[in-house]
Length: 142
Image 1 (cartoon, rainbow, N blue to C red):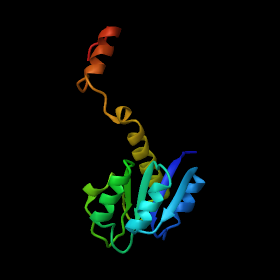
Image 2: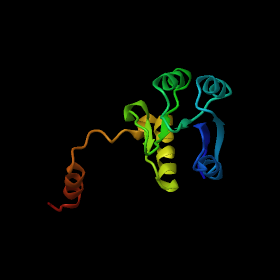
Image 3: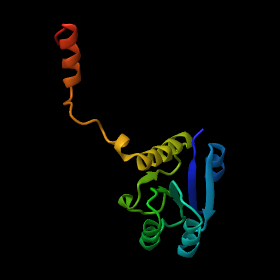
């Protein structure tokens, strides 16, 4: 089971809140409006903010309010007909994505946010360099 505190913003048209709770997340929900978002974020720290605002994605003003109030990653559940700017979000879940896929995406973005050093790719070794070191230790050559 995973854990973390999630703020779900918008209408839960796909029962994602129930899935998140079943997977061990604490979930609070609010409507897709600035005042509701402010109130929800003032209630306590969150590990991620998930937006499902239909038929339009959240406005840039609403996203700015969210970024000003929390450093938690922002995830969009994309609606098939809504235009959005992917760069406005830390992750985007495509329309009709299977639960195991979007749950993994959310867990990953939360883990990367909690420990950005572990999320970085390893530094130092060039591609194939590790194989050369192993071969030289064993006396094999490739």
